[in-house]
Image 1 (cartoon, helix red, strand yellow):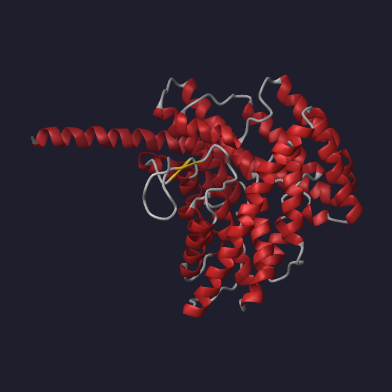
Image 2: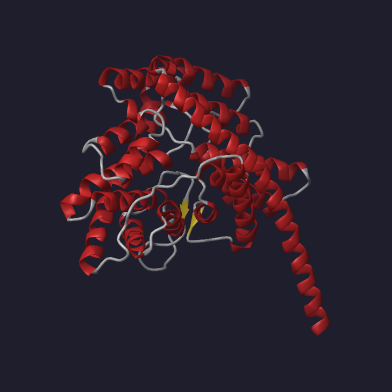
Length: 412
């Protein structure tokens, strides 16, 4: 009997070792790709800020992106939802998606579309992991695990949040069901990618903000109230992105007309109204918000412009715009609840992220890595409240929520 147990332990350790090697190699590769992409986005953002007239080319950029997708015979609707579907239920991820999302997101940021970059990170990593696994003869669950490793690695390389990246990719596809067998390889890939990106000079996303070491009951009640408001804004954001896309496809069925007109409207609004801070991801506005400074209308403007650009078809992602909306809304709403604006911005970012993606554990780890607070309790309260009160809305239509958010009965 003991020999059988020792033999089983040996097989188990060999399997774990094999996955560690695969994950570390994949993490290093995705770390290189993610760091390079990170630098590229920084470069084109600086170029756009120095030359605002580039916004005039946004309609042409949209047409070029769409043309490239059609030339490569990849659906223009292929994006993060395709990656989520692949890792949860199986399915192919086109190898061409990786270069297409890099080119598309780079053009979107260069020309000022209101999009983020995490969608590109998830698609790039998922495509690389999936297709490399197939290339070396892996099948079934092993391919899905490699796709998850690639997603976590690229997300970690671009944002510098290895723990949040690991748990996010495990949570996001099927909320309530985590594939713990993928935890070790995803964490290894994420950490390797983070270290590679740091070594190549990719700065992690950090927001130095002074937060209270702890809050009393009244303070936690205020945090909960702010999180409840953020849940409402999160629902509004999800509805705006989803219904905006449906509206655009219904009344502008021609994708070329849709992306060109959307780009023209975005350029006109930014140049005509001087909304330069709202083009691209807007990380500089997030920084000012966590320092306690945000215009009262900033969250609504960013929400509307992001819905416009996503509906038009510009490549990128929705998470950084979600952090923008959360930070600026929290900064403005916090004083109304008797809270410091900087604390409100930090809580707003995390609460709105959780409300939009339904990933409470990843949201809590995101708070730990972005702000390094002495006490995570306020963020835990915010995450719990936002998760429950945001209902079953999501940024990702392919996401499945397995269990009720109140109680433990499965959803039908």
